Amino acid sequence: MPAKHVDLALIPRWTIPMEPEAQVLEGYAVLVDQCRVEAVIPHAEMSQRFVARQIMPLPGHALIPGLVNAHTHAAMVLMRGLADDLPLMTWLQKHIWPVEARFADAAFVRGGTRLAVLEMLRGGTTCFNDMYFFPDTVADVVAACGIRACVGLIAVDFPSAWAADAEEYLKKGEALHKTLAGHPTIHTALAPHAPYTVSDRPLERIAKLAKTLDIPVHMHVHETAHEVNEAQRTGGKRPIDRLDELGLVNHRLIAVHMTQLTDREVEKIAAANASVVHCPESNLKLASGFAPVTALDEAGVNVAIGTDGAASNNDLDMLGEIRIAALLAKAVAGDASALPAHRALRMATLHGARALGLGDRIGSIEVGKDADLVAVRLDVPETEPVFNPLSQLVYSASRHQVTDVWVRGKRLLAEGEPTTLDVTDILAEVRTWRDRLADY
Image (tube, rainbow, N blue to C red; front, side):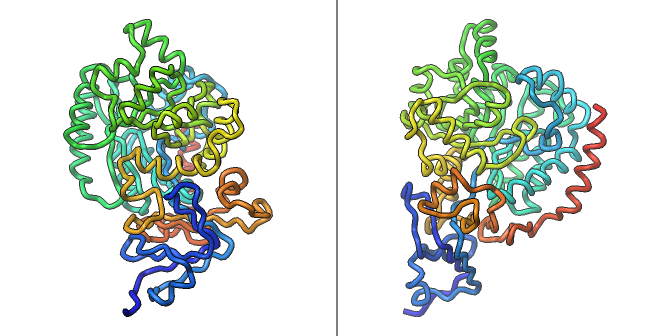
């Protein structure tokens, strides 16, 4: 049988496919053709079965699925460090919301999203789940640079430069969803901000619209004790119970933060097949609380990992987030074996993909899936000696060891340099925004 021609052969030292869980392959080749993974085979068999137009040895690298940042506000990177060391509501009401009211227009979102995408690609993130104003602008940036994104069709009750009220937010969101239908790297989710910023009527409509469009609902839920207490004081219900009554607690729900949960609520989320996004660094910085990640995972909940926005983190570093998630889970559970390295990495890849409804397309290195791949160099002083590459990735490696990134087989980061983004141009624009925001 003649050898099949393919576009690309990657030959890493280690391949970590993520499915089956905890597997590490050594001496394998990953073949890519027409945007997808064609084969994962022992390197010794490659020349017998395939002829690659390009062969790329990665002798000191681990090849992993692209990291999925399951919750962020990309454009908020322009507010990195603007208002630190404050509790959530003070941070929002006294600083972030006033700055957004004054500056958050389409140009702001474009500049911030370009910087965020650059930072994420350099750290091995190939897909991000966004929630911010001007989602059409976010989509334009994503399309131009080639990264994958789930663009949040944001909704809140209060006006912004994007929309006047919840009705207009949803009208614009539905129109954008239709415009983006079928795009290979841009997906959509309805994104009501939080239970305390979106009232019942638009939430009911969102529940129906999510079912009609068959897309997720991405929402901050149970982020702080204050949020939950205020909901009980003013409405007599905990937020998750209110959302359940409105038809939102189901397999489409992506509930972000979830630091305040009872055992009953963990069971409710598990029974609904909803997903939870854990944002440990933001939760720690804002003193929001600790998500019961181990309890959720043991209950069968699909737990993903996100960075939140860089205004409250203060970075978009998914490798750093994975490490903190693994360490924090052990402390919260009082168990050193809680959330082992392979599970934490799975949450940042396949679980994130599943939360976004993309588990059949990305999140693992499997034949037929899109070739969203990341090469991380481990043969450097910071990660030698390598006994277990999974452990090194989670507990030792930094984002600066990411050398190459592919989305649908297209190389977006080549030996640490972006191929579709102009770093000099982006930084010049960002510094202009810095000067404008400094006087807010």
